[in-house]
Every structure is written in C-alpha cells, then in structure tokens.
Length: 296
Image (cartoon, rainbow, N blue to C red; front, top):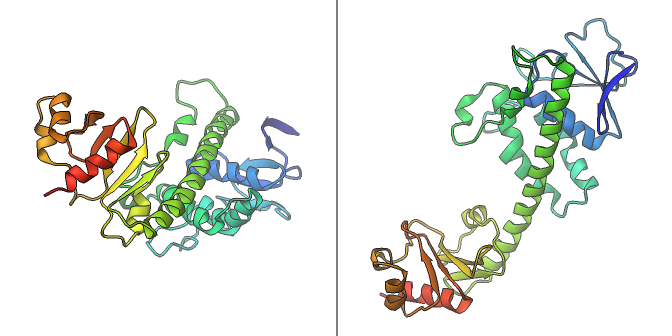
C-alpha cells in the first residue's frame, strides 16, 4: 500500500512494493539528499523506511544508508574515503557510481568538471557532516538544515510528513546548487580562456561571472584587475590579488567628487574602503581608472 507522494517519490510500508530502502527514524541530510538524487536518476522511487533489513528479501532493491551494503557507510571500517581523508556517506557513494550518468542525462557540457565540482564543493561536505568529521567543516557551512525538518518534541506531525517536508526542501536546494555548479564550471572555462589570451593587466566582461576559482587556476602573473558590467549600474573594477589595491589617496578622498577630480574620471561612482573595488558609469572610465592606478 503506497502511503504518500512527492513528485516521483512515494513512501510505502510494504517491502514487495518498494524499489528503494533506507532507514527509518530520525533522518539526516545524507539519506534525504540521497533519496532526492535517486529520484533524478530513477523513473520513480518507491521507498521503504525501516529500522533493520534483517530477514528481508531485498532482491532488485536499491538499499542505502542501512544494511552495510554498497551504498551504506556504517560498516566497521566504513566504506571508502577520498584522498583528503573524508569518508564516503551514502550520497558520496551514490554520486561516485551514478553522478556522471546523471549529468550525461542532463546533457551537461562539461561532465567531468561538473562532476568534480559538485563532489568537491557539496557532496564531500555532506559526507563529512554525516561521518562527524567536523575538522573538514571549519571553512564551510555544514548542510544541517535538513535536521531541522525532523518533528520537534512539541510538534504534532508524523515522521512521514516531516520526511516529505525535508524532501521538498532538499529537492529545491539540489536544483539550485546544480544550476550554480554548471554555471560556475562554464564560467571558469570562459575566464581561463580569456586569461590565456590576455595581453593587458585587466580583463573585461559584459556580465558578472564567478571568477575566484578561475584566478586560482591561472598562471598569469600580469593580470591584476577584472572588470564586469555591473548588475546595478555601470562597471565594477576589482583587484584580484592582495598585492594589488587601489591607491590610498582614493580612499582618503573627502568624498566622491574629490575622488573624481583626483583621477579626472567624472563618471567614478564608488570607491570601496578596502581598496579592492571601484565602480564607474562607463567602460572607458573603468579602463582609465586602471591606468590611473598603475601610474607610479
């Protein structure tokens, strides 16, 4: 008997109806995001959540986060780990096996790079969270928001109702993060290509793109600035290394009008106090500001 449904995910309490099995009780980001991921690669997920799989016929069923099998990580010696020391949880194991096929299905342009990006920036942190490897989470927000979907002590809702609430939240997060990963991987390729062909100390783009990872991957020591068409107004000019900052006299100027007179750039809009960002109304103003800053 099928109980409830979210998109193509259904819960059942009958093992012969299920094609997927995971643990019951308190859920975590690992088993919830694993369920969401499976819903992306399977036509439908009919999920049985149980406390133990002992004496159960699990033939033709995908079992995860329970049972010590291929997609569980509760074995005595865990179930593998990355070179950086992070053990796999269920989502890590599922991603390793099915991630590239999933991206192929979506017709992602750069499958290998997107696969690695998702693994490095998201999946491994879920793994570390579920394996309680908190030392790997110091510089990353732990994705523990799913835990908040479990029923509170003073909340009168069923475990299944709470699980579906978590699925909805995780599904929306997954779609947004995947979109972000695909966009950033494409941006890195575009920016690196421009860097490789750059003859100036600055790059110009007609829209804002994530650039920090591309800069780290580049060996171009001459590049100091990156100019974007701003989402607000005009153009943003950003320095891309700690060694390069805008001149102190710009920051020390009494107001923006004083800074304009100092630089002879009438369309100067903004000067950041940290000397890492300035804004102008025009591209010509942005390039002129770079040249002004480069003058000894």
